[in-house]
Image (cartoon, rainbow, N blue to C red; front, top):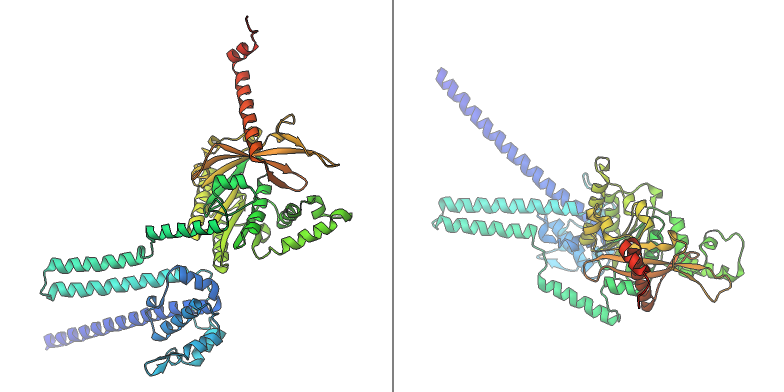
Length: 531
């Protein structure tokens, strides 16, 4: 009898164990299906709330109804929204209803498949009403989560099927194992490299750029500015990372401001984001107005005494700059200091909202903050910042131009490429690096100073040089010269012949200094000729 009771207890224990296992499996399946539905609802709700931004993210990630593994209603809703985007229509309630009632799937309309009119209306009127569904700034983490789960499910299904074939199948085990490996390999390529473009696609894209530039009658591929010699040397500002550096007071912020205005006005489909971390937005705006109309910046900022000769010009310049408000965005530190993650999120958001290209100008790079930067040395932070900006240009497909100051000791002489060797990232990550230098700030007797002739209030104009120290796809160790009009805070590029003359002048000055520093050469030069 005791043995019989013991056996009964073991049978009951086993039955309870099976029941608990079955309950765990059922609860896990319910949780799994709930997670699938929740992620799909997140995609639909955010697509309805921000169709332009989320729609472009779905398109760039090649997201389609095949990525939805949940209910047929969600797949039908997503497919209808994608159709509206492809047709250039807005995703709104009216267009959605019109699209859903057009076609019939079997005996039901698509509207009936998605749950009826109430389901669609609730989605548009209160997209985030369901528990767990919230608005997101970036839908890509949700996309990655969905695809990761889909790949895990497909891999699990494939491995179970092939393991059954190995145990019970009649074919050779190595053949079945090879088919399993091939199936898993296809899954791996779909998840990691399924959308890598081929070389033919790169050649086709290059040909499109060439045709476009021929129509615009431009000899370079990148963005246009009012500095033709610089554009020819750089082949235009392309979707790369550029660094403008120099000593204190050499005009880096002014140069960056002028580039921002030129890029916005000369490239009609471009949006320029100017992160001004050195000057506030009002000072930058004053410089832009002054540069646009060539009127004194002091009068732009504070026209206390009305000057009839330039007042109308100032008002016209204000209107001209105001018309560019949609394509020139100024961001300063008035809302708080900026971290590199803030910059990346802001750039991505603007790129998704706008249809054309985007250029990013940061002045200066050292004012961008990083997480845990207190634990980094200055060089480590600079190297990481430059790597992040290079990655930003590549990942988002934008042009990035940043300024960086050189140590004060270097400001007293012409900078050279070796001055950046201690900060390797600033030297090796940028696509091109050029130094700004004005000899007038160090030497009042410099020959790089001109009179502005032909005007009543003539004044001296310093010559600023841009030394191209690095250029991955062009010439290096070359100089370009600019006249700097301080009253307008504006640079004007010198003519090609003037560039040659100033370059030769620098070479002669350097040769003269070498001779002065060399006692033997100086003695030979001072010796009287013998006849």
